[in-house]
Length: 298
Figure 1 (cartoon, one colour):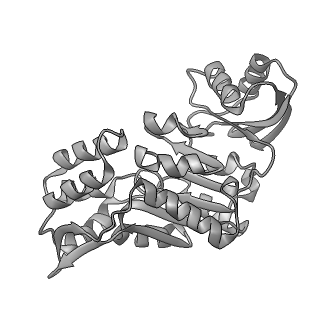
Figure 2 (cartoon, rainbow, N blue to C red; figure 1 turned 90 degrees about the horizontal axis):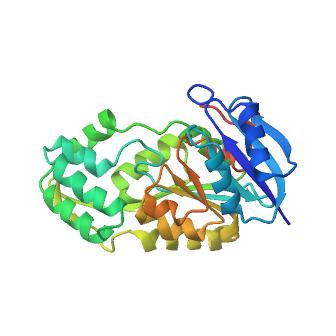
């Protein structure tokens, strides 16, 4: 028998977590479990002993709660609170894919979104897709990018709370994206990440040349940054929380002690050891055992 904590996460507004949901899960697992409500009607920890693996416990809980918008994540009781948080940007801490929004702004949204979808689903290499999309945007003025950021880009619910709460607990938080540093720099500052990394756009006369600075940051770059930060901060991969939504995040997610597919693609969900399909980014605090009273609300 192994000790686990199963975290059930609902939403006070749209899908409240009720004692009845918790009771159904306990019954389905056939085990006594100590409860710790992290937030009324939102999140509850169940501490259990089980011969099943963590993934098996989470799958069984999700099956029991099928038809509800309640997430279930099972982790070890040890080392829950992570010391390093590394996150993707597009569709993870912001609602949009920046390159798609740029495409819309210049009238090429449909074509660029098709290429983006192929990357997210793992049907096209990230580097090839980025080069193809950048070529389509050759000649776009810097002012267009500035307008896209100011008028089109919105933060995911819970993004600032997640980062600010982890920072207060001493975690180092880094935004790593296959997107553009033009956006990662602004988003990192807005949310409160310590640092950021993204692909560098090349401008001439305040217009895009259609190229990015090589080497392109893709799947391996995210993994490399995770390992580099572990060395610099003196933490192990087991002490890392990583979050992303697409195939480009797989290597990073697999390397982290707690790798979360946040509203992720199927290809990523198959590799992640935690999936959040319904909740907002505060779910990443609940699965680390934070009570809502500990959140830095902003």
